[in-house]
Length: 77
Image (tube, rainbow, N blue to C red; front, top):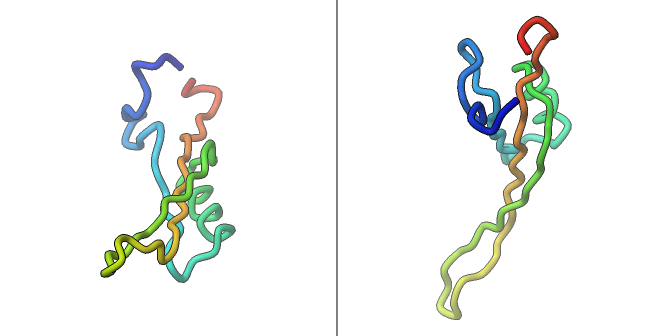
């Protein structure tokens, strides 16, 4: 796959898609959701969540984001 195809459509699906782990969702549940949609995980990032206080920004949590790559069958490559 060339860099030009990064994020482009393959039929009606994107080649790469981001999945956010929900508040009431486990990492395994998010991975299962990715698999059902036809994606395999390629990157995991955690982003801090800040709240503005009188003393400045305060980290109150984090959000896990998984990047998935579309699973292609041999005929689609």
